[in-house]
Length: 542
Ligand code: NAP
Image 1 (cartoon, helix red, strand yellow):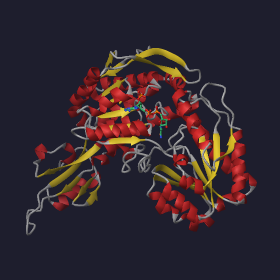
Image 2 (tube, protein in one colour):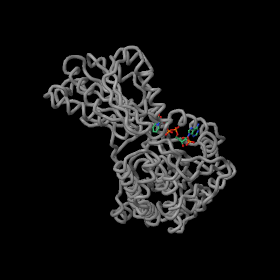
Image 3 (cartoon, helix red, strand yellow):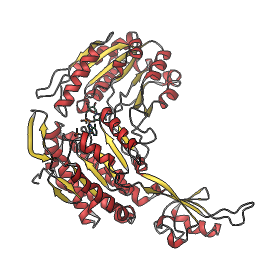
């Protein structure tokens, strides 16, 4: 494809009237062609107005047409072929195998949401039939369903140029909910965004949908991103990135005349708690544990929101052996190109600050990679007292760096766990002998994280129905939700109750005839779609 360097507003390429920006190859710091033209605020309004106009028809789409549209986006992304992997690799420095996996995750989650749309439980149909003879007061017929919020602004993440970008999890879940999307491209991968933007636009066109269902815009976050969130047509925001930008967007959204929800996934340290029993195997077992930890810290150059930045290990001989094995394992790791020069320089500043904090010592360090922006992966060590008393040790360092914290007792672990801020994950490495020590930690961690794992590593997030990729602030702006998995659709829905509406005025999802074959909760009881006719006949409320 010939890159246009333009935004795609409601199906049309639009040259921005603002400044221009280029993607950069982070392995060389060389700019990539073409230059992308940045929108002005007036031009942005065309995209938000089109999304608003598209909302009524898109939000009431028949489930089959809706699901097929999501599948067509997945097909169109696959049809781009190697060009997508090549361009994403040039713009991010991520290796082809990682990007191929990410593409599969992206298309897989679009198809998963197509299944969610066909199945229909997300519509949350509840029917409390009328009780005309109830004493002392009759009950009206009350029906509830979930409806989409309206146009959603989505901000692409730097570290997932496909799976958390143009047609990534936020876009897929918003479109599945029935919300048009205005997507603000991340400046680090504009060409990748354009390729996927055309794939989405083609699916919109081929399905005969209103073109305002999707727009891809280029512009600076601090001006155009802010204007997008302030625009009255936008009703919710999906974001992955830094705490600073996420909080800035939360403030803008809250200060609007009509405040809107912001679902921001920001920072996480993902603590791992190693119990004594996990270190009582052979030297090989300890080596294996060290290697798994180091692989989880260094994968994707550590630029994963679930990368384990903290590992708690017991004081004493077994813990010493683990620390030594970690030092050996990290020493064998070359640096890999980071996503941008800016992210590499933040990593350098963060490791410098951590390494010079009181009571922090180097455990081991790899070697710098051969490219630009490929610093040496680094692991530090400290004690639990330093950890609980120094906030510098709680700062996220985005990239391949981690801190091993030595503890003496379960009480130490409980104190440290109580001190950490909200996180996406917490992991426990243990054996059955450790269950009594681990048990009191679980309720503390439940209050702190969105996902608790045993004998696994937090990186590698399954996209499914039960997954939670969320957690209390500052991991996210709203701990009630997840940004990965099918539950992510809930972020873009709200309930509406319909009282005493005649069948002719009810939406299809709530009609007695159940034309969309939805499972329903009738008078509090779950009634599967197949049993509907019988249930309606039995209760005679309709
Ligand atoms: P970022 O700076 O937060 O940028 C993310 C998006 O927000 C970009 O589209 C950016 O626009 C926009 N933006 C920036 N400042 C804004 C503002 N004041 N108002 C509105 N929008 C704004 O994140 P990043 O570039 O991806 O990475 C920077 C740091 O974020 C990393 O070093 C890391 O600490 C953190 N990060 C964390 C995660 C995680 O999952 N925990 C993931 C990625 C990054 P522009 O394109 O114009 O900059």
